[in-house]
Amino acid sequence: MKNVVLCGFMGCGKSTIGRIMAKRADLTFVDMDRYIEEKEGMTVSEIFEKFGEARFRELETEACRELSEQENLVIASGGGTLTFQQNIDILKSSGKIVFVDVSYENLCERLKRDTRRPLLQVENRNETIARLLEERLPVYRRAASVIVNGNFNSGVVANNILGILR
Image (tube, rainbow, N blue to C red; front, side):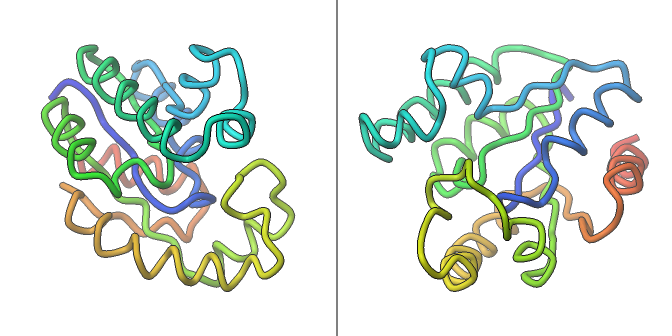
């Protein structure tokens, strides 16, 4: 196995869990959104604002291709990355996809003050979370090699994933 790809809804803890996993397993952590930001020289919000979601999704697919060519990575994918089959195929070819499953209630709590995610900068955030979660959950489940309960402390979730993958 070359890489571990964490997927799940925004706010599920992919980045935090990924950093912990990488440190404990002596791997390199990559947050896909940060990777795109560094490459493009602007934030995800700025990319959405200037070029739209479609362009951001193209950049996301490019990032999937580039990262899948590397090894020994723990990759925190963006919340919408795996809503595209080509990204699933690319990332599956490079390792295991782990779905970090977090309840709607916990996601709403974790995201209630978020100002970074463009899709959540709307009047009724919880309705948007519910709608997107309904669309994305089946996709995450289909894409995943492994599903873990992400409703716990990030360190516990990281240990659970590492234990399953060993």
